[in-house]
Length: 139
Image (cartoon, rainbow, N blue to C red; front, side, top):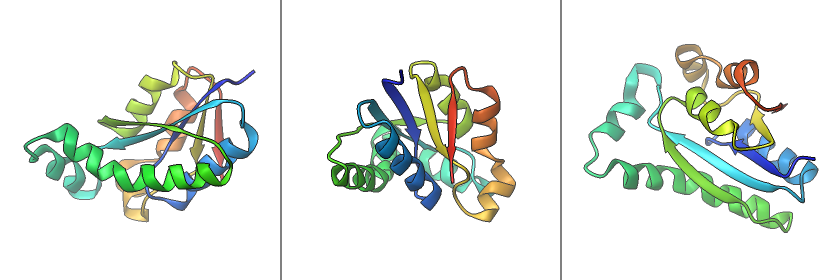
């Protein structure tokens, strides 16, 4: 039985679909929305701008606020509460480091812009191939 689900989210529509899948199919599970801040991006913009912040953790929380607000709003439509977590680092590596604490990972098939996918690589594919727990890829 799946009782703890990790849903990595960014601002993409596919991440939203992953959360919808988790909410529809794992209603009784504890769902944690994870946002990874400061990871690689084309030309290093996101990581560099975060590194220049005086309080990196506070800046990461601020950047995750919109993602978490959207996630909580969507969860409320299903009558479910989700917990949220922000981490710093490379998205795939960070998700894989957290995955072992959950029964499953539900991740969007792709996220971000085309440039992000080309430069950074496919996070979902890396998580799917290396996760210690089952991974559900939502489309």
